[in-house]
Length: 251
Length: 288
Image 1 (cartoon, rainbow over the protein chains, first blue to last red):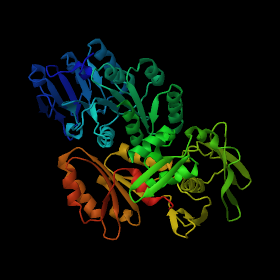
Image 2 (image 1 turned 90 degrees about the vertical axis):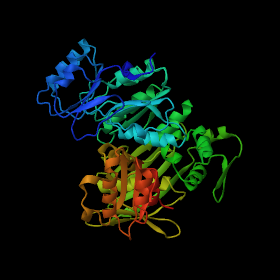
Image 3 (image 1 turned 60 degrees about the vertical axis):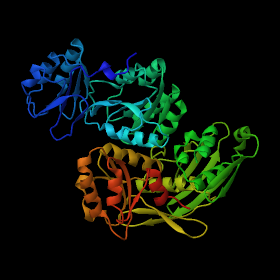
Image 4 (image 1 turned 90 degrees about the horizontal axis):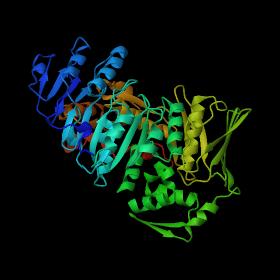
């Protein structure tokens, strides 16, 4: 068991691709590139920020060839055809992809993406997988009333095509030694693994609390998911405050 | 307060998240309403719960005999509202019968939960506005300690209001569409609205970067900002100052950097800072 998400440490190479307007935070040494720059190929830095002015989506394949450990796709659009090829190529090259529309990840003091680490003030081993960075901040704030908080945060991104599905990121957190419980924020606007409830039941060695949003837009889908989680005796909540009371059970 | 919640959770009330966020008065009325074998003593800010005896008795407390009509009202001789609560002893669900014109139907709701549009069969209450009003009425009842609700339907060109009066003739209006959530993130806005919808109402969501001040007049406003960027804090303060008026309070949930700076900059601007959407709802919806 590791203590780092995606086994990512400061010696590893990681890339964040996002828009120029997004403020970028990172605890690693990095350089901001306004345009896709030759320097990236010279390997001057471990973390690269790449502006979405990339005119050719295929450049992402060139980035994969540089063998970074992780590529986070920020607010960039990728066509479905490229997306499919990207998933396949990254798998062959053993490169982890996150996004698109991911805000990055946070683990204790290390972070990459647009997440602000200062928002996480109580590192007590709890973790969250979410579609955006704001829900984790709200949960951290609620947890802080009880002097507990989040140590890990993975933002998966939004849309029907996610490079890292909920199931994969869940496994990532289950494998982390210092992660005590997991909040899984399922946004019904995203692709969600159909068998996620059964997967949790079979693989959860840690306390997992599921929070579902987007219920009004997808009420029928919501009903089916909630039913499945309840049938599998998984803690499910529809509200941030409920998350807190369920997380408190593990303390 | 947390002790009370723990006791309530022990009793199985975790199925009702909203009660965990309820005020002391709400918890008291809830315990009394459902006949929990607990005695509630409230002295200023202290709440004492006494176990009256065997907690297990609660399981047999609700029986089929507990059938009562909680509200009855005719609207324009066409729609008859007949909320009828029947505690089913076997499945512990409430069956609510609603008659609308010639149509009859019922909905099954967990005794500890609020009614929502999703739960209500849309075929027998076809009018969306009325459906929402019925939901508001039911939820108001569930959240109050009244046995009978005195209700009145007021229709205007734009809205349907459901006026609910308590025995002391102190009217409260449950509104349908005059709440606005101003937020800086769509998902957060939807999440807050989700909470409202569970109580049978719905707010309009506006982006703080795209608000039209004139359209906000006569509205109840909840500002929800989750801000992780110091650079835009001043911009948010500026936006809220523009919206503020001395004769109208704005409610604000702020989670973010420079919290002290943010709050002190808005001192004297008639902004009420709250921690959760429930605090806003208690002020807006509840019949007390």
